[in-house]
Amino acid sequence: MTKLNMRKMQKNQSGRIAAVNAVGELGRRIRDMGLVPGARITIRGRAPLQDPVAVQVMGFVLTLRNREADYIQVEVN
Image (tube, helix red, strand yellow):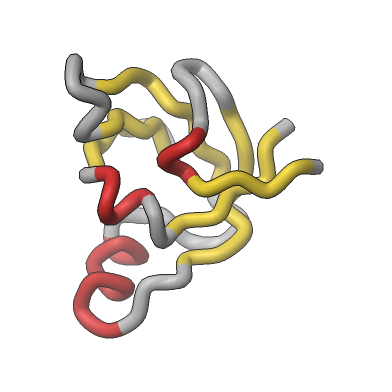
């Protein structure tokens, strides 16, 4: 499997979160949203200027800014 930064994933690409490299308040907030190592995600879309990104995780869709997605490493299929 290939590891990618979440920002570089394409629409409809899926994978499993390998690591969340954020610390402190940002790291806690990302993990509170369900973006934890081992969680399966799918990129559902991007805004016209590529920021934010819509991510499906655990049956719901949330959006992340690219600066937040930079902290998340994903193993893609």
